[in-house]
Length: 439
Image 1: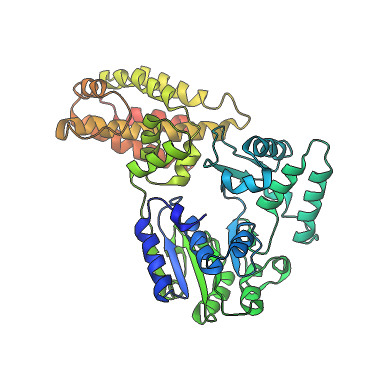
Image 2: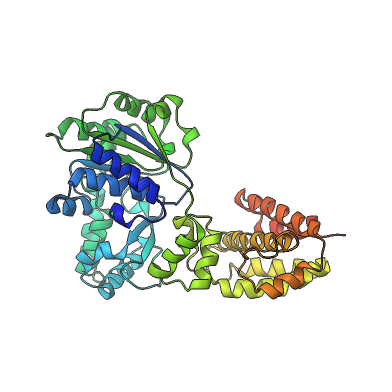
């Protein structure tokens, strides 16, 4: 990934390049903003420009995760966004890459490969951390070697699958992985940290006047001991060193950490540029891309998570549900909404998770819909966000006072919060109508 490919953050990109060209890159930076808007992707792209300085051999090593002047800390439990074009060097062509993905899915290495095609498609890979972490008494490097060796010997594997796995999951020189909590051993290189290139080893062993960059994704996951150890490095790093903390929760970090970092704020990506990105590169049809961008609230990561959702069937469901809402028919609302949430888990082994996801998506769509209905009186010319036909929305809006639609809108937000807090998803959706519909 290069800075030229960053979308929606052109102002941030220009600031970074201006700092590099003027020789005024801070020694520590805080990249903060909503989840999934591209903070870490931008940090890695900027690190690539600093570390490689346009040298092709350096760029090749950086892209393979084996550059000795760059370290990325990342959480194995988080989905890994991978642009397919970045793996074609290993797989040769997209059909072979898909075959390699299928092997890795079959061997329980990963899930999350999208059915969409094209070299620019981003697969949001969900890794199985148990494949290479959590073996008591076995060094991390040995775990990785054993797993890759077993994959290589499998009769159902392919050479391309092994190389893709090595590119994605091999420790490399530039990668340091953790699960949920980033401990001090990954900062000072003790214990399992000795099998990674840590901050301490990077700064002590790298020589020469070239840039050295450390990126800590989800920096709020550092333990207190790790953050205090990192703080010492933040105070006085060697020349030509950049330490980047990436977080959506800056207040979780120590005030002393925040005070030592130049802050760069990332905003949510506007709907139109995000929709254009989804249509042009992610194989999403235009109407669905606009709705998806709206639901994602400016987050590329959230949009990719929702990319496989069938919005057409859900909009048809809303066209069936809303007349009952407008008529105040509580019994029918409960029956329709309850059945929809229950149906969300019929085609999966993890029924509860699937129903929670269905309820979350349904409530997001209802929130947009009630917003459209409430605004029909005050701003009838405002662009609809729900994706429903304008004539249909106007006819439904006229059947209840605006106060009813406003109450439903407010209550939908509360129901969505309940679902996030593990309230039974069907009950949360049904309670929305019980509480908000007129008696």
